[in-house]
Amino acid sequence: MPKTAVGLFENPGLVDEVVRQIEALGFPRKEVRTLEQPTSFEVTGVMSFPRLDYQVTLIRELKRIGAAEAEAHAYLDGLRRGGALVLATGSDEKVDAAAEVMKRSGAVEIEEIRGPEPQLESAVGESMAPVGDSSVMAGRVRQPGGGPQLFVW
Image: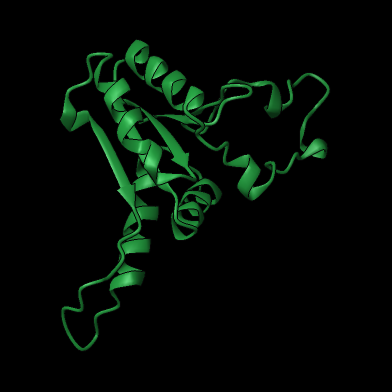
């Protein structure tokens, strides 16, 4: 299964150095991607809504790799505010190392942007472990205290 680390950076000026550090880990360039919100959107016809099309496509692609709806919107909000995303896809060990590079370089923890996930206390039975104690949730691998998110897809 592919695994992807996604880091949101409030300062896009950091992204080039982050990419260099990730590539130094042995990532092929095609497996490390960066994304900023375009400064202009090409209109292709009368019924063209290029900004909306971009946003819908981005959310769909983030959800495809395992991001929850709220996470995808948090990343989009970060881009709207002038941030940039770095995505690195590869083996578990390489992606974990890429996530560490992103964390050290100042990737924003998206809970800081969107707030914590709701806890459904009443849904947890006496014999069940609370969902918040699990390190894997719906395709996301949680790392305590980390900025980047890891998605398994």
